[in-house]
Length: 113
Image (cartoon, rainbow, N blue to C red; front, side, top):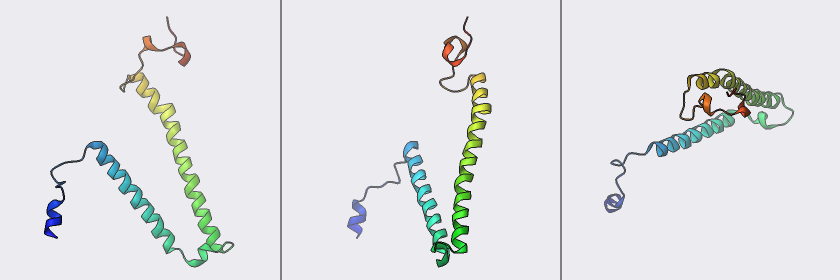
C-alpha cells in the first residue's frame, strides 16, 4: 500500500486555477443540491406517491409554488437589471465594452451629430 501511495502525484503543491476552482465549486454545489433534494424526497411518506391522496396534491402544489416562485424571482431580477443596473452602468461607462457616445449607432437610439 505504501508503494501505491508513493506513486500518486502530490496535488498539495499545485493550487487550482480560478477556472478549475470555480468548476469544482459548481460541481460540488450541484451534488449537494441534488443530495438535499433526494433527502427531502426520501423523507416524504409513502402516501405522497399515490395520486389522488391529500399529501400527493399538497406535494405537487409545493412543487408548483417552488417552480413558479423561482420564475417570479428571475423576472424581478431581470427587470431590475434592465431598468436599473444596466442603464446605470451604461451612463457611468463601466465595464470593458462600455459604449461611448461617438461609437453608438442610430440602431440603438443614440442621437449622432
